[in-house]
Amino acid sequence: MTADQRFGYMDHARQALGVAAIPVYWLADTPARISGSLEEVFVSRAELLDENARLREELMLSRQRFQFAESLAVENDRLLALQNASALLEDEVLPAEIVNVSPDPFSRRVLIDKGERDGAFEGQAVLEANGLMGQVVQVMPFSSWVLLITDASHVTPVEVIRNGERALARGSPDGDAELDLEFVIPSQDIEVGDSLISSGMGQVYPKNYPVAEVISVRRSSREPYAAVRARPMAQIRSTRHVMLVLEAAAPDYPVLADETDSVADGESGLASADSAN
Image (cartoon, rainbow, N blue to C red; front, side, top):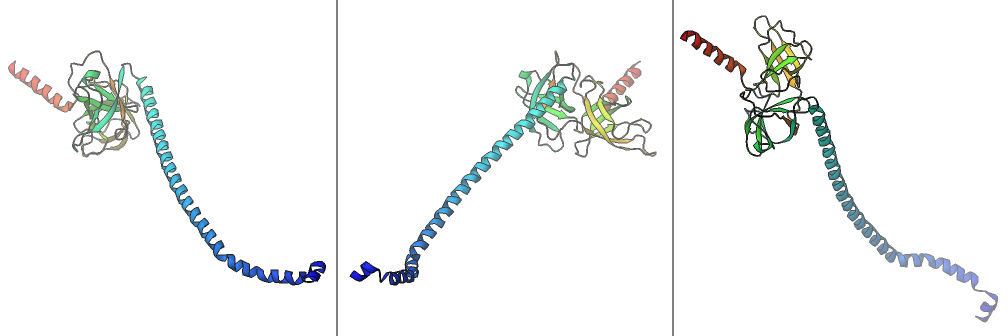
């Protein structure tokens, strides 16, 4: 031992034994290393699951905020369009919002959040930013029912912008959100693509406000009238915001309905007067 300490005779042997013992140490430490690795894996997986759940929640909240912001932007655009459309009118208007739709499949009516206390009255014209919507037919203290121009019982006097041709636009009876032009003789100059505006006849709707666009015209020599179909300009199925045309007082004329009935009543009255004479 003294010689080894002074002259280092056993250094090479110790080095060889140390090298030979490395695998033994490595094998002896394997369980500890495996345990540490597994613990790290499980901890990392749990952390990843927690982080994933947190990110999913944040993503859902972000989507909700984005959808809310998007809906606000769309609503602001509609309100701006409504404001711009009101500039085309000489009369004052009252903004209103659609709050319900009639469940009756044979009626095209919507409920608005303005009633008698707000100045609504029967026969009042209801407009949308892009075109006519309809007219008030029933007034309650805080709300009103509006008959849409697409209802089969509603008739709107219109004229063609291009040439001034006049017609009556009735709601389609087949349930589509479209209009049929009545009593259009084949010689009348009405073509596909023509824009229809309110003529002002009947004194219900403001004159020259957009109503519809002609989408089909069928003429037949065997029919006395042409079949003309038009699509309303108003976004009847999707809009929520409308405006009521205000007047100084409620009009004396009745709600605009089937003009053919009124014509028939007038003719019967004239016939009665003639027979009396």
